[in-house]
Image 1: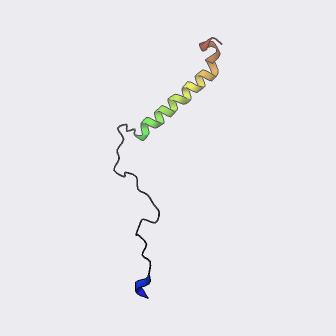
Image 2: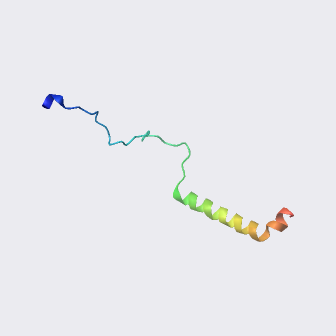
Image 3: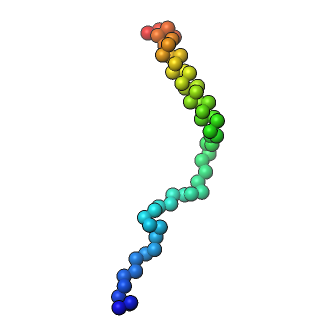
Length: 57
């Protein structure tokens, strides 16, 4: 009976690995992301308050 067993290929439980060693050419540290978010928020506030005058609408 031991010879009648079906052997399944061993795997990683359905998990797929995609290039774990990939490094991006663009790197940002967390401080830069926070500064960029604050700059975008300030620009949005300025445009909300003074957008009609600045854009001439």
